[in-house]
Image (cartoon, rainbow, N blue to C red; front, side, top):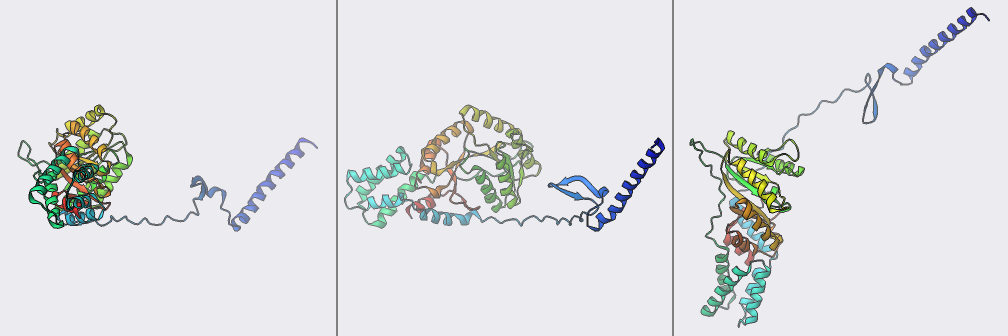
Length: 383
């Protein structure tokens, strides 16, 4: 065959191939296969999406914010929390009453009383004072009946807890140099695991229940969950949270922004949560010192609250010593007080730092934080 013949053969093959594809295209469409030019090369979740046949996206429903919660008034919490403490099984009051009600108190009985007080973490000094007062009054008054013994013990326990201390939270707005009111700034410190961030959220609820406006500062920038947790607490009662846009940001900068936000919005109280690290005193001093310096450029500090876990006993006292030296603590918040028989930690930590317990946590509920009242506390111990 010559070259012309080969040319005609080649053209015929090409025509047949094209016509076959054209004939097969309708068959593909009848079987449900999309045309080749309608297939997108983009994938969604590993599935090829056909652009020409993709269903229209359903309309997105507008998100509605959950209704704001109304915190319980703090005044109504005290009796409920006292009753919870009484039901927590604390044996301190029962043991003291049992021994003091015996007909003849021997030295062994007084030793048993001392051991009971020390096991309750009340501390050697306060325990000695309490026993001396009880010895004198029992010997002079000769009380033995249960009711008189209970009244006597209650009176002496209230004294050692010290009702004369000022337990109010400094949340009144101070005046700036030009006479305009500034927000009260409350710095909250403590190690991780004590319930510090939760306490800040619960304290915001206490303040909202009192009619105060609040701004939260999430200055614990080293735990990603801390800012989320704090923001959730605030959102439940309509409180705004100032937070960093990235993990590991400068805590002092976040604290400053929160105070500035509170100042510009004429907010009553700014609550600043801080990181709970306690690797060494020097690092803690540097970090808290910087936060304090930066905050006070915008407004003075009204309160520094130390959050302690009541179940940690003597370890909590060690933490209190370090923070007391570094942060200028003005008040103590004791959490998980219903989870321990060592109610004496209240007395011990007050003696250690020379500052009062101002708030106590007695449960997991959002409103289980209450102002500390010495008489209610003692009544709870004694059942």
